[in-house]
Structure formats: structure tokens, C-alpha cells
Amino acid sequence: MALEVAVKAAVGAPNVLGDCPFSQRVLLTLEEKKIPYKLHLIDLSSKPEWFLGVNPEGKVPLVLFDGKWVADSDVIVGILEEKYPEPSLVTPSEFASVGSKIFGSFVSFLKSKDTNDGTEQTLVAELSALDEHLKAHGPYIAGEKVTAVDLSLAPKLYHLVVALSHFKNWNIPESLTHVHNYTKLLFSRESFEKTKPPKVEYVISGWAPKVNA
Image 1 (cartoon, helix red, strand yellow):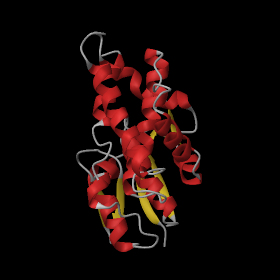
Image 2 (cartoon, rainbow, N blue to C red):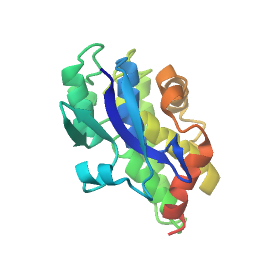
Image 3 (cartoon, rainbow, N blue to C red):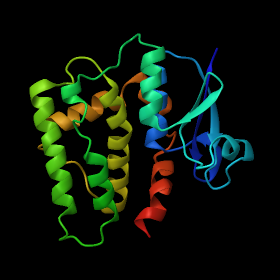
Image 4 (cartoon, rainbow, N blue to C red):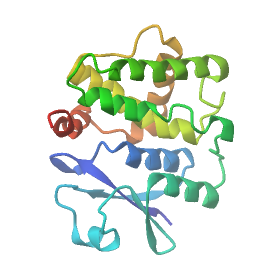
């Protein structure tokens, strides 16, 4: 039976898959594990009553497990690994936090109005650390095989690439060749192609209010 999954709909296009990186992480996990699922697209600007009824905080993603709606992508991915252990996507514990500060650094730099506040340097330092890790352990975080940490990072790196190029005319430094190879690998996976926002414009419109705040 297909799992029911509630994820963000695109801004201004409520019938189209949206740009939430945490929703995409769950969808990537379902695709990589070949678990059938049924999508509920949630317009976050006009949340349906049933959705708020089962999830008063109104956050996505949500997955229905054994009659109970569960929120939080960390929790959901953990349950999926437990219930559907094959193929295993478990990341070795020593690699589980690789790249974990990249998304926060990206958001700080994206929102920054001061070119001298150090946010760009912080992001470059985090990406450089990822590059060094991939150089030693790649092509994926834990080696030859994709694991949960890659599926968490893939949507975040996609948002970083799209949003910084659009709003800041900024790209990942060419010198970080292992990061560039990593993003190419991730973004070309079938699971990623199937679960990414259909247009980059949806990513841009998702970030615009935060950038212009």
C-alpha cells in the first residue's frame, strides 16, 4: 500500500510540487528505497483544514505511518529506515554530521545585506571542508554508495546553487572541484530528477520573501 505523504506545493502553483528541501529529502528517501507513495500537495499560504487538524503546527513534510501522521524529516527518515531497511541508506556515524552547517551558512549569506559581515567567508569555509572530506572519502559522503546524509544535503545544495546564483550572482568557487562533482552526481540521480521542483522559478519565489525581508 502506498504511503501518504504531505509536502509543500509550489508558491503560486498549488497543484505543482514545491521547493521545500526537507520535503524533498523525504521524497528522495522514498524513491531510493522504491517505496510507493501518494502525494498530498499543501499550499502553505492556504493550509487545508484536514492538514491543520492532524498537524496544528502546519509544518511539512508529514507522512502517515500506521494511522498516525508524523512530522519532521529527521524522524520520518529514521522510521523509513527502520520499516524499510533495504536498500540500507544508513550513514556511518562518523560521517553523519558532514556538511551539517552548510544550509545555515547559506541562509545567512543569502539574507545578508552587508558584504563585510563574514557570511560569505563562513559559507566558503563550510564548502571547503566538504570538498576536503569528499577528496578523502568520495564520491559520496560515505564513499561509493549514496546514504541518508547525501539525501539530506542534495536539496539544500540545490537551493544554494539556484538561490545564490539568482539573488547574489554567486557560484560555488571553481576550485572546489570535489563539491562540483558531488552536486553533479546528486542532481543527476533519477530520484533527484523526479523529486526536485519542476522549475527553478519555484525555488526563487520560495526564497524571495526571506531575501527581501
